[in-house]
Amino acid sequence: MAANNTFATLPVVRRSPSTGGRGRAGTWVPNTDVYLSDKGLVIKVEIAGMRKEDLELTIESNQIRIRGNREDGCRSSTCSFVVMEINYGRFESLIELPEGYDLSASTAAYQNGFLRVDVPFAPRSRGNPVSVPISTD
Image 1 (cartoon, rainbow, N blue to C red):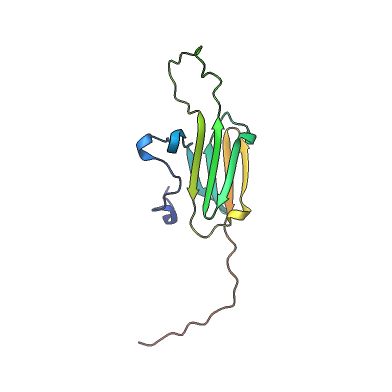
Image 2: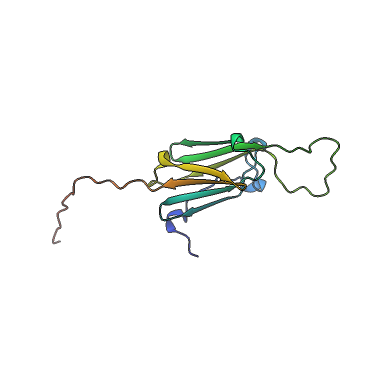
């Protein structure tokens, strides 16, 4: 499936490439899908094992910031891991959006380990028509 050209050069989700998904100061960045629907933009973040009360979603200018802290119940000396692939602790995801979306009308729902944020398209301006002269040169 071809990507929309609007996002071809846009760094949508901020990640630290040198840390393999780890963010700044020991935070991690959850896996995130961003796609277009007929109503706007959909952001789907994979953060299983959370309670919605432990999630924070804020809008700043043209950015959506998702933060939280996934607790690990087995960080004591009684646990001896054989394989450890699940990220725990603080996480943060910062999604920058281009113009054309109404961030103030965003909605969010957390279900089955996924946080879904719907950002509708901004209403088109319905100003007065402007006549543009056409030259013959």
